[in-house]
Image 1: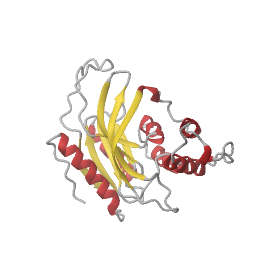
Image 2: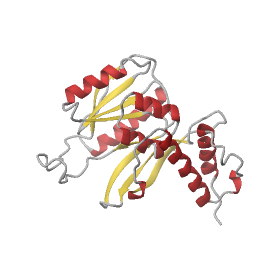
Image 3: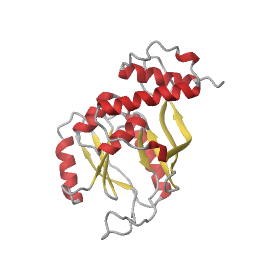
Image 4: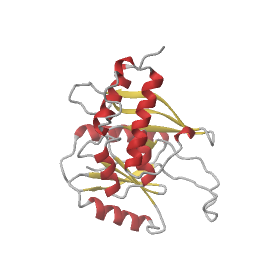
Amino acid sequence: MDLATPKQILYLKMLQNEFQNKEIENVNNENLTKKEITKLINSLKIKLNKSKNLPNINFSYYKYLFTDFKENEYTKNDRFTPYTYVKGTQLNLKTNKSLSVICFFKLLVLDYDLSDEYDSKEKLLNFITSLLEKENETFLVYETHNGYHVYCVSNTFVHYNKNTIDFMQKLKCDPFYISFSAKIGFVVRLQKKEEFRNKEFRNKEFRNEKFIERFVKKINNFPIKPDLIDLINVKDNYILKATSTATTKKI
C-alpha cells in the first residue's frame, strides 16, 4: 500500500484550508494512500469550480508529464505549493497530440481570445487595457496568435484560491482558462501548435502560428516582485529556444 507523499499531504491541507471543507477536516491525512488523497484533492477542486459556476472541462483527455521543476524552500508561512513552476508535456489523449508547457503556481496568467464582440487585436487590447488600468496591480501584456496573455508581476496568486478565481472573473479572463487553471495551475504553451484543419472556421482552414507570444506593453506602475520577473524570464527563455521570435520586454 503506497502512502501519500508529504508534498501531497501538504497540498491537501492547503486546499482544505482555502476551501474550509468540513466534510474531511477530521481525516488523518498522514494515513491516506496516494489513491485516497488524489480523490480528496480532486473532489475539493470540483466543488470549488461548481461554487464559481466555471465551465466543466473533461480532464480525462489530458495527461501531464512534468520533468523539470523549480522548488521553493518551504516554510510554515508559505501558502503556495512547494513548486514555483514545473515544465513538461501536455498530452491530449483524444487527438494524440502533445505540447511543451510550463505551469506556474503563483504567477497569475490571464487569457483573452478574439471573439464576436472583440473581433480585432486592437479592439481586444483596448478592452483589456481599460479593465486592467483600474486595478492596483502591474501587468505585462503579451500578444498570442488568437489574442493576448497577461501576467501580473506585482502580486502572487494561488491558482485554486477562491479570491484568485474571483479576480480572474472580474477581469473577464476566458472562463475555460479559469476552470483549467483552478485545477492544474497557470499553464502556458512553450511551442507553436501544429497546423490543423479548423472545422469551426471554414474560412480559416489552417492555423499557422508565426509566434508563440510576444511582449506588447506594461500596464500600471505599481511595485514589481523580482521573483515574478524571474519566472517571466524563465518562460521567455524557453520560448526563445523554441522560436526565433523575440519576446523582449522593457520594464
